[in-house]
Image (cartoon, rainbow, N blue to C red; front, side):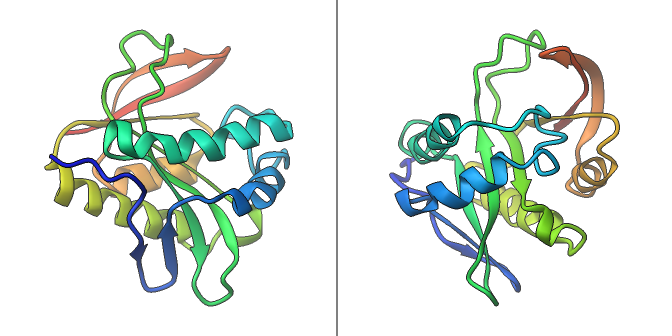
Length: 176
């Protein structure tokens, strides 16, 4: 398999998934510094230095892993509304939760409730299946995040256990 050097552009009816660029730093900072946006992804707002690390590392996954994160834009407005994609974070906890592509996303609260998470993640999974073949992917979701649990179930994920990360209980889910 040839690994892409940057994220490919994918368009859905309403969304564009595209490579991250340096100019995305400000909207990434805005999204990751808002407590409501990060409530279920660690729950702690990020300082600008961590947001910059996200932009750079998200771009860096592609040539190393052959997958990574995309910038998420709303086509109608052209607005940056989040980050979606895959990573292998080489997590220490929960035990054994590493080595397979892990899906994840954070979407700006300003567009919550429009179905963008489901639409974007459906496009991500389709891309992964077409380019890497269908294989195990994983995710972890806080039990209170019912919207993300529904998206994961729609994508074919099933809960296989429970774990804890940074003191927060999570459901461990997989798609085979």
